Image (cartoon, rainbow, N blue to C red):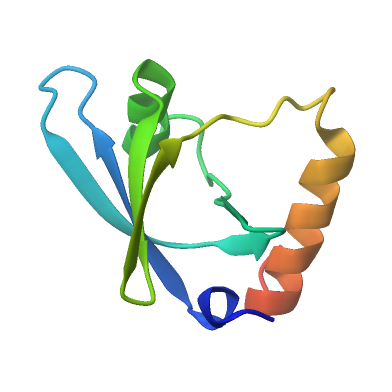
Length: 96
Protein backbone atom coordinates (compact mmCIF):
# COMPACT_ATOMS: atom_id res chain seq x y z
CA UNK A 1 0.00 0.00 0.00
CA UNK A 2 1.38 3.39 -0.95
CA UNK A 3 1.75 6.32 1.44
CA UNK A 4 -1.18 8.00 -0.28
CA UNK A 5 -3.41 4.93 0.00
CA UNK A 6 -2.78 4.78 3.77
CA UNK A 7 -4.41 8.18 4.29
CA UNK A 8 -7.99 8.11 5.52
CA UNK A 9 -9.23 11.17 3.68
CA UNK A 10 -8.51 13.26 0.67
CA UNK A 11 -9.60 16.82 0.00
CA UNK A 12 -11.45 17.20 -3.27
CA UNK A 13 -11.90 20.65 -4.77
CA UNK A 14 -14.50 21.08 -7.47
CA UNK A 15 -15.89 24.27 -9.04
CA UNK A 16 -19.42 25.24 -8.09
CA UNK A 17 -21.63 24.49 -11.08
CA UNK A 18 -23.51 27.78 -10.63
CA UNK A 19 -21.04 30.07 -8.84
CA UNK A 20 -17.80 28.80 -10.38
CA UNK A 21 -16.17 29.17 -6.95
CA UNK A 22 -13.92 26.43 -5.55
CA UNK A 23 -15.66 23.97 -3.24
CA UNK A 24 -13.58 21.65 -1.06
CA UNK A 25 -14.77 18.54 0.74
CA UNK A 26 -13.05 15.97 2.93
CA UNK A 27 -13.99 12.47 1.80
CA UNK A 28 -13.01 8.81 2.03
CA UNK A 29 -11.20 7.47 -1.02
CA UNK A 30 -9.54 4.44 -2.51
CA UNK A 31 -6.30 4.55 -4.47
CA UNK A 32 -5.69 1.96 -7.16
CA UNK A 33 -2.90 1.94 -9.72
CA UNK A 34 -2.14 5.61 -9.16
CA UNK A 35 -5.75 6.78 -9.50
CA UNK A 36 -8.11 8.00 -6.79
CA UNK A 37 -11.67 6.69 -6.53
CA UNK A 38 -14.45 8.22 -4.47
CA UNK A 39 -17.80 6.56 -3.88
CA UNK A 40 -20.77 8.88 -3.93
CA UNK A 41 -23.41 7.98 -1.38
CA UNK A 42 -26.04 9.99 -3.25
CA UNK A 43 -26.41 10.92 -6.92
CA UNK A 44 -27.49 14.37 -5.74
CA UNK A 45 -24.28 15.10 -3.80
CA UNK A 46 -23.18 18.63 -4.64
CA UNK A 47 -19.57 17.62 -5.29
CA UNK A 48 -20.74 14.99 -7.78
CA UNK A 49 -23.05 17.43 -9.54
CA UNK A 50 -20.19 19.97 -9.63
CA UNK A 51 -17.70 17.60 -11.24
CA UNK A 52 -20.26 16.46 -13.79
CA UNK A 53 -20.64 20.11 -14.82
CA UNK A 54 -16.88 20.74 -14.76
CA UNK A 55 -14.61 17.67 -14.45
CA UNK A 56 -11.48 19.70 -13.64
CA UNK A 57 -10.64 18.94 -10.01
CA UNK A 58 -7.87 19.33 -7.50
CA UNK A 59 -7.04 16.63 -4.98
CA UNK A 60 -4.97 17.11 -1.83
CA UNK A 61 -3.79 14.06 0.08
CA UNK A 62 -0.81 13.34 2.35
CA UNK A 63 0.50 16.86 1.85
CA UNK A 64 0.53 16.51 -1.92
CA UNK A 65 -1.74 18.32 -4.38
CA UNK A 66 -2.78 16.99 -7.78
CA UNK A 67 -4.81 18.54 -10.56
CA UNK A 68 -6.79 16.33 -12.88
CA UNK A 69 -9.91 15.43 -14.77
CA UNK A 70 -12.57 13.47 -12.92
CA UNK A 71 -15.02 11.12 -14.51
CA UNK A 72 -18.00 9.19 -13.23
CA UNK A 73 -17.69 5.47 -13.80
CA UNK A 74 -20.30 4.02 -16.13
CA UNK A 75 -22.35 1.29 -14.39
CA UNK A 76 -22.24 -1.01 -17.43
CA UNK A 77 -18.92 -0.25 -19.13
CA UNK A 78 -16.98 0.04 -15.85
CA UNK A 79 -18.82 -2.68 -13.90
CA UNK A 80 -15.70 -4.75 -13.13
CA UNK A 81 -13.72 -1.69 -12.01
CA UNK A 82 -16.62 -0.50 -9.85
CA UNK A 83 -16.69 -3.90 -8.12
CA UNK A 84 -12.94 -3.82 -7.44
CA UNK A 85 -13.10 -0.27 -6.07
CA UNK A 86 -16.06 -1.14 -3.83
CA UNK A 87 -14.16 -4.17 -2.48
CA UNK A 88 -11.02 -2.11 -1.83
CA UNK A 89 -13.11 0.53 -0.06
CA UNK A 90 -14.76 -2.13 2.08
CA UNK A 91 -11.36 -3.52 3.09
CA UNK A 92 -10.01 -0.05 3.87
CA UNK A 93 -13.01 1.37 5.75
CA UNK A 94 -15.24 -1.58 6.59
CA UNK A 95 -18.05 0.18 4.74
CA UNK A 96 -20.24 -1.35 2.03
